[in-house]
Length: 502
Image 1: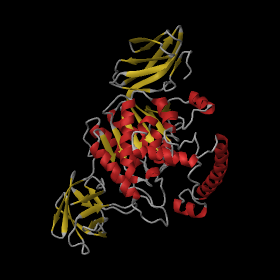
Image 2: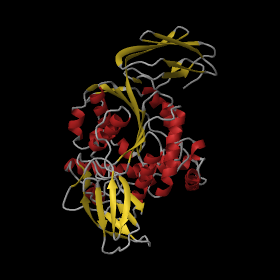
Image 3: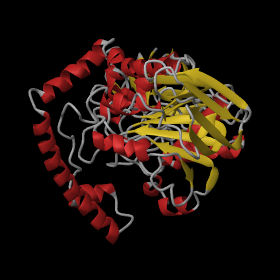
Image 4: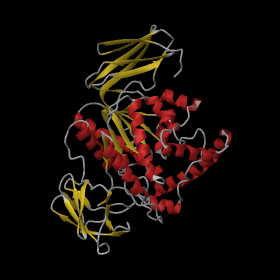
């Protein structure tokens, strides 16, 4: 925003949704010492411009609208129309949060049916650097009503989640889409936060080494060549899809080739640690909202053990920036995935384990378990209805106090009984989909794991044993990058993966 002239942050536009039952932050720029006045539904709030900036808070409002918001400075008025008050969430992460509604399962029909006056979206311009071109794009970015004409490019996950919330809460719902495919968790926090941990400093150091002494001009030349190769690949993909809309990624990878990745490293890259935070998140902060939906982690599976510390840093960062220490945070655990001809190094399993620890240890953090989802050789599974629906259930139960069986079975206790292990699960009664319980493994003191047999024992327990392990010391379940789970609860939610020492 430009100082020394009256502006209201570009986060505010016609059709926006303001958060109900909280003080509502407004901000912008202005001429030093001038009075700013904001009016809505009988409220009249004033403040002064200081250091070229102003901010104020409207008093909490109940759900409703449409309203008109006026912001006035020295006879100049900005008017925002069709303003609703309801629930606002930020949807963040990388490509699986980014995957557009039109590209999800049955996307064309979903878009045709996406006519929801009470559902609104704001899509933050994707950038790692505030160039003149990006600033011009930001000027044009506005809140939009969810209609078939507007819904195709919104996040499919966020759409399905928001749609269910709106239907069940019967209040307006607004979503701030803030994500970039291929980004690391380190892209979404500020430099001070990232430098607090050795893990964060390691990411900064490694990326700097990739850049080396490369100039911005050299980086842009590399990007031009990269974009040429990417377009050639994408044209091939689109041509195959035109011939066969149901073509699989396995076929595309084999006949068109693997998507060119990663992009070249550069100082202004979208993938440089902290760049999207400064280019995108700072634009949104401190827009008043309820909480955060987050789907990310694929890019960090090469260093899974670092992920828990970095994810904790991100949650703390966002809550501090919004000045809400207990803001709800719903994270999506990675689904099943493995590339064709790739060995199962269990790095996805290790990262899922870190995600589970975060959800267990940080208050008001909830994990969306997707271990029964995912596609072989497709890192972007197109079933986003399941993802969004489960995310909405977690919000309804834990944030809005509406019980709806949001949490699936989670390992509660493990106990050794001679040559077998008894695993107790929390939640609803268990069921097996299929002929047997798959993906349990046991290990002795040497931590060498062997496939194990497992049987239900009552409604909440599973007995696990293996002929290869006479004295089990460790047990794990669904601890693979890719596999087929069969253990669910009676509501169809999958048992969460785990690894535990007896």
